[in-house]
Image (tube, rainbow, N blue to C red; front, top):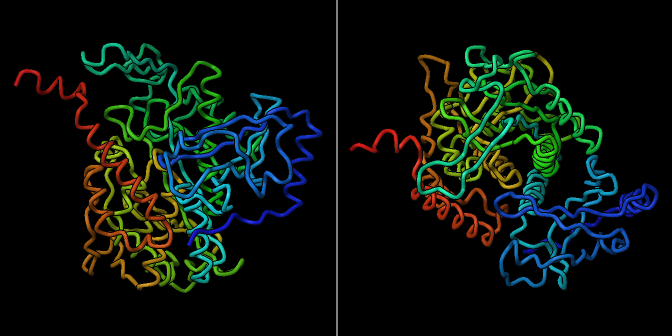
Amino acid sequence: MVKPAQVVTLSAIDDVLKYIATNEIRWIDFQFFDVKGLMHRVSVSNRKIEEASFGNGMYAADLAEVFGPNDQGELVLLPDPDTLARLPWEPATVRLVCDILVAIKKERFLKDPRYVAERMETNLSAAGIKNALIGTEVDCYLFDTATADKTTRGRGTGLMMDSREAKWGPSPLSNENRGAYVATPYDSMYAARTQISETMEDSFGMLVDSHKHGRSPTAQQTFELAERGLKSAADAVNTLKFITKNLATAVNASATFMPYPVDGERGNALNMAVSLWKTSDQNVFYEGKEEYGQLSQTGRYYIGGLLEHAAALSLFTAPTPNSYRRLAADSKKVGWSATRHDCLVFVPHAKKNIKETKRVVYAGGDPSANPYLAYSAVVAAGLDGIKNKIDPGDPVEVEGKKARVAKELPMSLHEASAALQSDVKFLKGVVPVELMGDFIELKERQHRESLKGVTSLELQKYYNV
């Protein structure tokens, strides 16, 4: 059954309209996301937005250009007043993230990825979970320049990236032998990273718990976003991408969230730290009397679900052909641990007896993921583990005991697609079949496209066969 549009409080709408009227705002950026997770936007005059826009939606563009033809009817944009933010680089513009609404029926569009996150939150509520909080650690690269030679693709690869931190560059700031989390001056993008973090907080109201130079030496940046509700956490990741790319472009730099852009490094990861709360004071993952990691039995079942469905999850958490190059360079043990960060599932346990910090981290993702789909799928897998009491086995470092024999992760997008198609039941009621069909078809097409391209490595190794 298709869910009707959410009811938004009038006070929130009034706050938006009042802000626009009293702060010399001329343009409202309506931002929305396609199945791949790419942002699209339409800028609407302040004269066009009114209270009814938040209930009936607003026609501002032919959305079939983004989502393709559909059987539900004409689509309109439904702004979410809780996402209001002023763009610091566009002083007369605010943004509102939008849901996609079917105009005549006033029901949600089934292929809107943000709707998937809402459906997952509804399922959590039905399971007795008041709130799912997700904190995100996400990597990206900030290059000084990135130049694409698109005219001679047939002659070989045509993308050149330069960074003052790169081992191949002339700068003395190379980080090749300095390890992770280097300090200035070798952390040459500290000022840029700080500006990104402060823009997230000051302009968009999304907290950044920490930022640092990444594990990879060539100008990799890592941001730890404060925990938020599931849909809001996905909004935060997309907002980070939006800010980072715009601020980089403003200074003629180049930002990329591509999973594996630099050969020989570990690539960009996206780690999801989830906690489930039955009440505002009851974290279902925390058990103070449990000796190992103070993780409850419910938390273990949640991990069991993640490991059981790990192969299927990969299509959402590692959704590009390039994702599997990153997983080859920075492979994860398909198991869980409270002490080892090289596992697919990690249970942080730096401090004892603090229920607020008891989370389960899924470390199989990268920033090419559509976070609305990836977060929903990961939580759905964990919830299935709780529902069916799936045993995760012993942690990987426990010797002499029974460790869970988990399925290996896929090694390609095609394998991930096959895994999901054979293990899709846990997503019933979360991902609409219409969106699922389009998503799988997209991933299979991307896999086929990836097989046609010739890489520089292939030219080097096999030219003289």
